[in-house]
Length: 304
Ligand SMILES: [Zn+2]
Image (tube, rainbow, N blue to C red; front, side, top):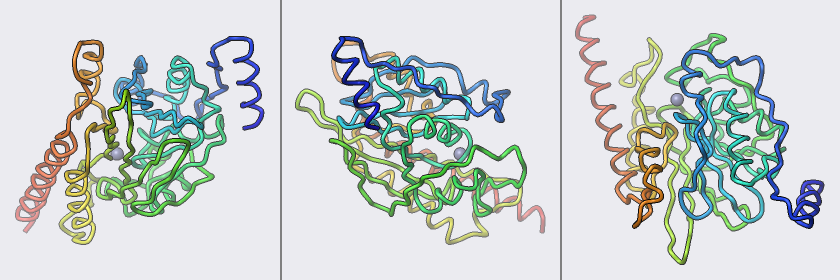
């Protein structure tokens, strides 16, 4: 870290923008084909509000927060997205080496796949719920994940240096107080994150709400797992009730994030401000979960 501070100071002294191209190498064991290729297209980074920026691909969210004393990165995409994200961070004038903390929504390859490469380039610790940490250390979903499959195609690069956080814990980096809100359901370790951003004297609460999609492998049934189902319903209710001026989610199209980005330069209010964003997102998945349970019941009736 000291080396980077010295380097940044030296660069500032000679008046060059401190956008250092980091040596970020996407894990070659995870080629980007099919689904990954569709989700890995480069997206120009943009500011959301205050010191929070979108640095992800066209289809998968990665967020960068400039805390004033290091960067926080939340999520990122498939392993191959590591270089896309690194380029976006550099394009904003930041350095991957200055990432001080990495957080994750949930431990599926399309969100957690980049973390190993970006952690290697930055040395940053990862903050995660205990259940998410267990999966990340293994580099594979745990057997209690509704989408669990014991096949190689479900591996991702394992992550180390994980700080296990508790539900409601706030981690402070620089000026940013980032709070973890556990939202299990889509995965057992699912976590939403919230923090405050201010700009020109106006402050807004930003929520990075985790996926709440009730999908599974061929054998898992929510109705056979009442405790898990209860926890899932609680998660949906928590997201709906969160103080939320700006809602961002792992799959950006679910809150129309890029459509909002297209309106950035129009006069008027910040296009991302939407105090009902979290509630609408939660409602959509409350309905999905209802349909899923009805389907499970119908399938069972057919089997009997
Ligand atoms: Zn997922």
